[in-house]
Length: 235
Image: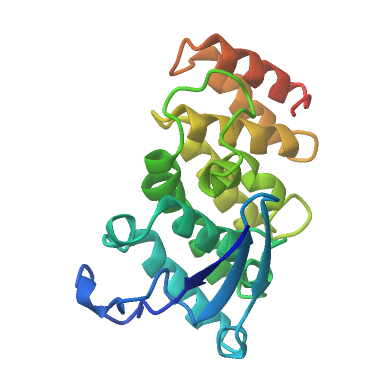
């Protein structure tokens, strides 16, 4: 059975931090209104993106996204399913065009906002994804946030050869942040990304080796996955 989910992006980047009343009653995540059609049984989505949102300047999109990552009211006002769809729209290249702002030529701003993806890990992945991982890649398929966490560096648009050195460094810093997070889903996300990058970016393999020398966990599932990632054999 199909259901309609309306998501309104109305958080202003210029509004004083923490003043939650600025989020409109039907709003979430900080851009322009759009409709998302969710096919719950088929786990597929059709996204109708508004002209208003697509016409926003890159700097404005980054400003809105910055607000999304720190807005304190989002977890209280919206369900994990709503938040998951919104984050997919912002960061999954298969769900919307907004993520391609990270390929703009202003490398200083792009690198800054890639670095701010640490907040995505801290405020969303750590909150909504399993703290303890029992098996790699096993999560509730209806949990869009868990999917985004696990597959982030597969579906994000920044990857080796597709960004400047400054942007690549910022991305590696985000993975390093995830690698040392107490939430094991965040660790797996980082291991996954570094495993993909290791063949092209030597420092990614060094990071994996360093992590294995002093792992912050004794979970055998994560340790085995890290060894696979070091060899570039990830799933």
